[in-house]
Amino acid sequence: MQGPVLGARSRQWLFPWLLALAALANLAYPLYQHYDVAHSIDPRSYLRMASGRFDSVSVTRRYRVLVPAAAAAVAAPIASIYARVWPQRPEEQWPLRFAFYLVNCGLLAAAGACWFRSARLSGASSAAAALALLAALSSRWAAYIAGLPLTDSLYLLVFGLSYYAVKRGKGAGWALVAALLLGPLAKESFCFLLPWVLWFGRAALSWPRQLLALTVGLVALACVHVCIDSQIHAQAGHSLTNALEHLANISYSLQRAASVKGLGELLSIFGLFTLVPFLVLVRQKRKGSALALQSAFGFSYADAAFLLVVAVHMLLSGDLGRMGYLAAPVFVAMLSLAFTHWHRTLGPGNTATA
Image 1 (tube, rainbow, N blue to C red):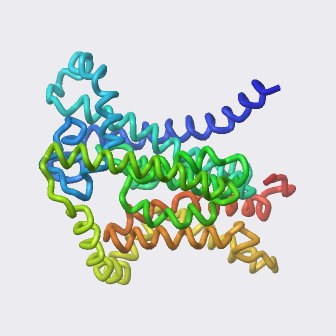
Image 2: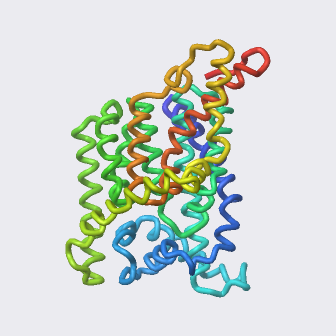
Image 3: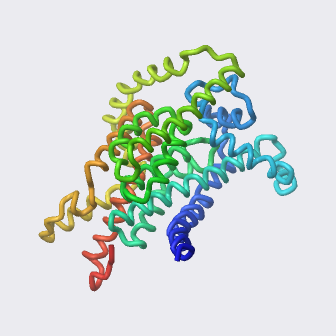
């Protein structure tokens, strides 16, 4: 019995991962192929890190080593054959850029699988969840994150695993353990998601086990700090100083969000799909339905707190669109339920199933 059950569970995750991977491989390839990384400091920094050079990398990015290390490992066998397949790209960086493309597509697809599973747990149909997943992956930020030498894909996976674990509760402790192990090394701002994980993740994993996993992740982060700082002779306290400097971005982010350009940037995170849940609510209200935000979309205190964590990231970063994409787990859940309710409202026979 155990084998068939495990097989069924694997298929539940394999379908959305393959669907997301297929979409991302198409959408992100033009950026991998044509984007000039010479004009962007983030891709240049991560390419240097993947090459083992940390001396000129900003302290903001210096310790996010997991994705660059994975890209370096993938690039090693690719480098020997890359020039034969693409002789017009003899530069040393191209195999490494291709490795980042492969790693980021795989990681972001895994995050997409978490979004899909969370949407199903919210009560959406499989078709609606798949459609909402593709809608979220059509965002320009998905193509940007998957196609360029960046590390956001791992952080999105941490957010996706955390949200899935809270939605699933009992039986999803593995997802919370993975998030707590990877989170500290994925991005320093994981500290803002951590209280949400500890509080709302209790049903999935008890506090002692959460703290044990977090301790392992923090020890790994400390080891990375020691190794890199000793290699480049960095002064102690730079990380704390850099973190405090991000507080200056709050005023800028608020002013930008209040501008017409900032509002457009916010709406462009998920594009016109942002309007779908609101259109469904308006239509149901016109038809006399009493469905509210909570009953229509399963919106909970955990969802509201999750969006608050995303808002903190947006304010401290100053990059409203890129950080706003962290809200994808909640957005996919809401959009998939909007598609499900829309089908029930407009479709023949009310045949949709949750």
